Image 1: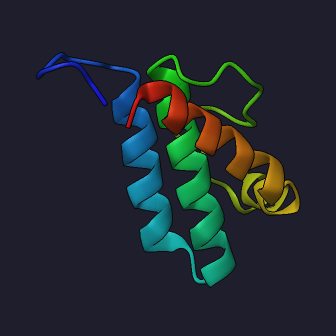
Image 2: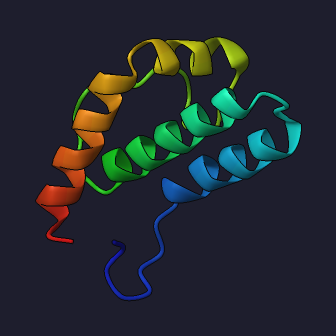
Length: 88
């Protein structure tokens, strides 16, 4: 989704936080919520989503992941719209 090999400093914290959360999470449901959150934050950093996203770009705390799980349908709809807008 990033043009060519363009440097994009907004993506690094998202990916770093996501990978760290995967190593630390023991709950499979939180893993799925972390994936949705990482995708939405990536789409947002690339300009394909302008909605509110809880927490800082590198934060994948259990509290935030619980919020994502509670609004799963909303997050999936936003992800789908962002992917469609990206042309993929």
